[in-house]
Image 1 (tube, rainbow, N blue to C red):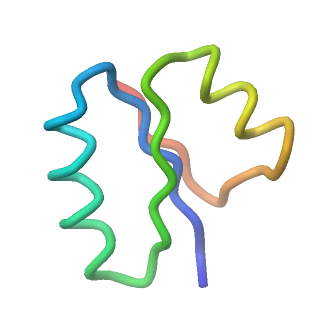
Image 2: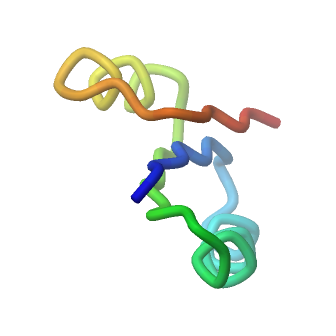
Length: 52
């Protein structure tokens, strides 16, 4: 399954995105900041990154 990293400081927006994208072929990983996103990518690079 493909993985999508969704980066947004709003937990509400992240939850909505996870619900929408999770219904497709993506496993959604959330990050609340750019620094968190860098840490996620350093550990295991996602297939797609969405940043607001």
